[in-house]
Length: 328
Image (cartoon, rainbow, N blue to C red; front, top):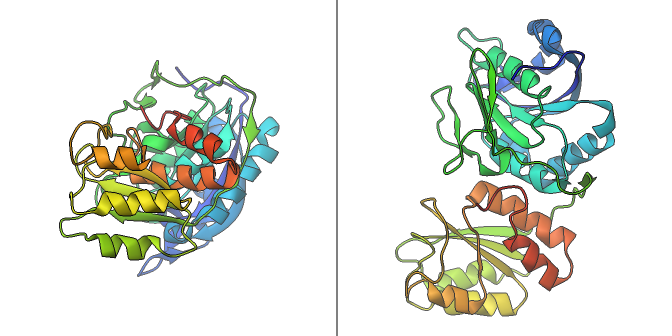
């Protein structure tokens, strides 16, 4: 499959290593010069750039997710696809957030960035940009992460390497597309089943708690006693186990107080709270299984659910649904 002629692409720049300069690296002026620095993009599509912000990705969060989703929705009918230049450290979080916010998506939204700045020798920025723009002209109606010749499902992507050009992986899911001499699109690309709609709301009052040997009920209770906490992503061992020392009782009390608890696994695979005696108490407490979601997918999903679904029954049903391919 190749890019189609006459396509127009909106390129949204948010910052990241690709446009950085100096030592230590910091946001620079390259975002405003992308088309000049990479003129071959104009041979792929009619690319219209827009600088949304110019941030290190560690500064990207729910407010920026809302801004990006809103821009895509407002400009949805004007462009055949979108490319979002983003720093690598939190790219997977932002990609997952947009996958939830943009339901019924019928065109590609492609995140990309670089491990080395565009101004550097042996940079990967030029290839990633060209690949992302070409993918944005293809029939791939998903939010994806494009790096090193692969397009990965956005809500399944994780940053896997800080030193090599293949910075991302999507454990358990094949790439949506592979770029070689041609663009090979996977048969598992999702297709919209509802009309396009954007709900860009996120509630940032979510905690991530990693279960570690020695975690005590008192320590967990202190983490969850903050009145600002509305949701917890609990990263457990294995398929959802935790020590049988009273931690599940703390989780039960938190859920009874109105806090939503989603269980993920630290090691990958599918959460199954019925598999072990040390996981059943979480199920009985009312914790929700996170399927195959990693932290990067679970956090924005819980933030979106808390903001978009005031009715708890609807919220819990949506959290357990496979919205964008994040769970299975």
